[in-house]
Image (cartoon, rainbow, N blue to C red):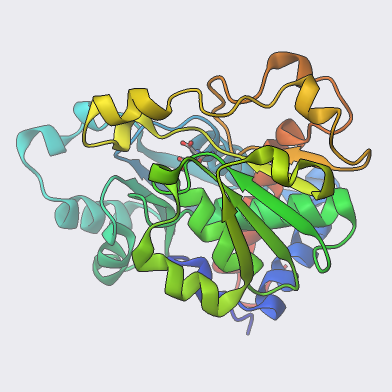
Length: 309
Ligand code: NCD
């Protein structure tokens, strides 16, 4: 039996290198299969999604991934049109969705929401973003992108810049990178450094340095992972305004980078990468978004098929 069959995907901490590499191999298989064979993988299966926070890429990539492997999707992307407005609890909503679906995808503003939901759901549950805590499928997509574009992960120097305090993709990426031999540079304003309650866990997994100055590291990086300042998660707008626009990656910075370095971003981008970077060979964030569809198709194919595909 394949080890992902009927399993929840709650935290990237549950993934060792071997598991990640299995997903990457299955993703390569998805990419190589012709569309007819691909559609056999989850033929007749239903994915249920519940998004309690805005999403473009994550929800659409799950939907498009499910369609590409022959399944269908149903769900709620605008919670204001659901019975949550009438006072229905998350627990009841999950119970109902798990009756109508073969697997569930949940995005919710609370840390711990996915773990809680997985205990209620009769069907496997995939965390598509739980508060500021984690976004494991984004990390799988990010690691796959690095592997595809740099041909390896081990040995790379990786800079992660922006909102390291509230950006959940940063935490999942760091835990995931902990499976590899990488050198990590964290670059953020002082007030947006990684949360101290996670520092111990991250230190156990990998070596990193922290600095507010991108200039200190820019010329040595193989990968620059840029993140958005998470305006909606600041308890106080004044604090947001102090750090808004802290970093802007433009052609001037790019010119200081190694010729074969790559720039990633989980998206949405606000103003932290200028549009003229998009057409350079280093910009890989749109490829990253495309890989998200394939990694999610692979994951769903593994979760929903006893013997894999
Ligand atoms: C991210 C998220 O929701 O955490 N978006 C995404 O899924 N690609 C990043 C963000 O919102 O900044």
